Image 1 (cartoon, rainbow, N blue to C red):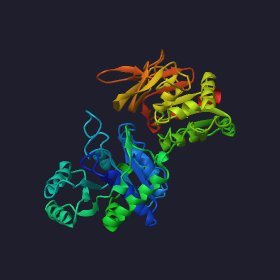
Image 2 (tube, rainbow, N blue to C red):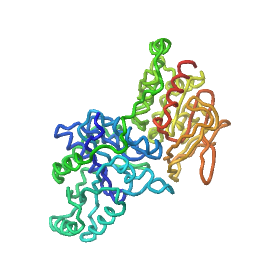
Image 3 (spheres, rainbow, N blue to C red):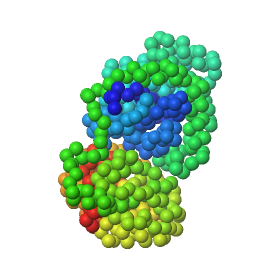
Image 4 (cartoon, rainbow, N blue to C red):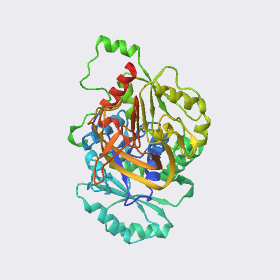
Length: 461
């Protein structure tokens, strides 16, 4: 694939400016023109990519320079964009907001520079007129390596308001590529951790994406936006697409025999467990697993022949009653874990393995209780494996992200999963027999050996 795939980064001065509406609507509008669109999201967010997938018909992918390292941003982007005509990357927070205390690391601006991609700045113009020029000028000139190629004005009140904004921006020298009026129908509902995931909204989510597309088609200059994307040039650094296959692995006859006996790895899915990176499934498959999904809200049995279990993030607290009511599956999970089979659980998966969640029985794999909390725990984490587990050897260093409003007591077991480094070092999570359970969301592309180790344990446990 050519490393010069046309691309745009959709950014904003701050959260709440309308990035998701514009990015998702633009993806859908390009797709409606017959273009194959590659959707991407800066940062660890799992929810926006679901809307991106609806808009494009392709899996949404994340680009996180903290979790995966700056060196993987270009290759992961190219991997996701293979076979596509254009790529749209939705930013995170404000354009220059990165990992706390780490300068530009993992900011939208950082990712835009790593990709050599032009930035389109989405500005909430609802409470300003001439001042918009000063704001745009500041963002466009702050870092000369960041190319702000245009502005899309959001929440414009009237024709007169638009006229004032355009007059002001002529002085800033940044072209206006779109003007969007206020439109309540494109609003997407939120709750304690952000937007409600696509899997929970179904038809309503499809309608919301269609409304976003209609608004972008009506208010944006798609021709100018596509031309800006096509002027991006090659991705810097001569990046080649990332691949889930190990570059040092060469199949042998024993490998071929193992492939005939591919262990079944079951991944929790459905409305309660929507947080997953596409690369995890690809890595597990490349390592020789037969990956099958199941829905803990509805399925009373694990997939036939399950040898290992992956339970990612999501909202079990919202579905605690339904999860608890599915007693046959809770027992099946407990039995699998009790047999020593590999089980990897992150955040929501951790809660599901606990004894109870908000007083309702869960799987009881871990002797710990979970409950909702008023306090939001949020941030990147630098972690090291405390001991050997089905995921990592002792001393393996990985970066993760924590994002929840729940508390697990105790916070760690006799064998913790991770030692979290930083100003206030601590241990967290649980390792017992084949179980690795933790609050930390990790991106396995940063350490592909995690998937290979997990699949190998599935073969031998």
